[in-house]
Amino acid sequence: MRGSGFPTPRTAQEYIAQQPPEFRATLEQLRSIILATAPRATESISYQLPCYKYLYMLVGIGTNKKYCSFYTMNPGLVKSLKEELKDIKVSGSTLHFTPDELLPVELIKKIILTRIAQNELLAQSRKK
Image (tube, rainbow, N blue to C red; front, side, top):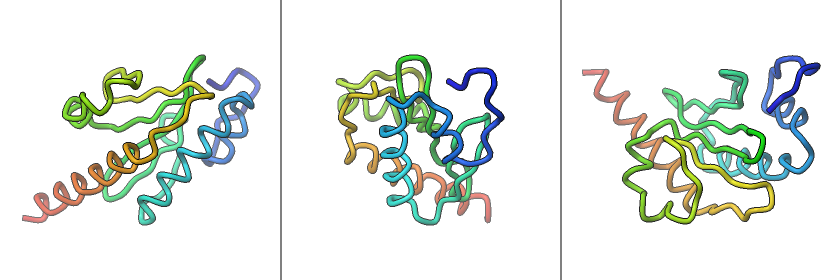
């Protein structure tokens, strides 16, 4: 949601600092959940958003005018969790949360752990 006047962020901290104050706590919480759940993931900026990579792209976070977004980077995974996501705003493979909304921490952890397993399986299949 960066407006003009901000340089392209180089780190997740810079990205979060550039967002409106009401979005920062949710972004920090998402970042903390990702780093705690995927300690071997590397954090970088990709497509001007904080992204996390473990073997391959894992997940990402960002904002738009109304929401903080959690990018699962896997539409099939989102479809398979349709029932668990029924109370969450979803578009494609992205979950959206308003800044005042409580995050479904266990569900976010489940998604991250599933993405880790998917990336490990993909890495194994490419070694053969």
